[in-house]
Length: 185
Image: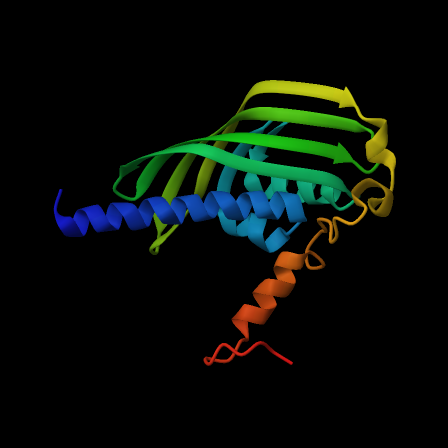
């Protein structure tokens, strides 16, 4: 592979990883813009009980996520096989979830996102996703029903939905920061 080809492959892999991370932020922060930016408009998603359009999955997920609860998703072991404007991507994930209706019921999920990524107009996004579940465990955790102050104590702030989460304040600051990098007053 030529040096230019190697550099492009690195850039493509990094763009795919960034897309996966945006998806996780979108789910965890209930951020519709981030979620939609991870999929092409015509993408499909086979995601547990959902098997259909990615747009339908996002609408259903946002409805449920908008009710509250806690979520943490992480992706690891991202394997990317590039084939021109297509890529086969397997990413392991870990997720912890507790719904607002049953905050004391914690669900631990491990599995893999098996994704076909496509590059269109220079951008990589998911065109088709199949979620493979390798481990699911539900546990009763009565302490999770407590409010944030009781649960986290001095460990503030806690995670919030978009745009109240701390990461969105940071993004707003750096996006509008003057070139001399002085913080806004």
